[in-house]
Amino acid sequence: MTIQEQAQQLELLADQVPTGIALATKGELEDLQAQVLGLLGETGSATTIQGSVQIAIRQIDEVAASLENVRIQIREAAQHHLRG
Image (tube, rainbow, N blue to C red; front, side):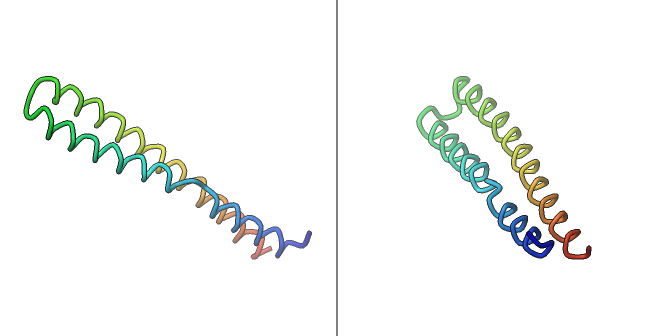
């Protein structure tokens, strides 16, 4: 495999990093949070659930940032191959 081909393969791998899954999950949790608030109103239970959802969202944000870092590192490796 040539260096050019390796760089192309790395670009394809970068596109496979599943960053969309994390963002979609975050969106689903935000929707769930709004539904809980709609059902329970401003109650203690709703506040507890919202706190748990916020913790999960922060963790998803961290995962999404880590996944984006993976994508960037793979792309940088591809660029390094092209520079030779």
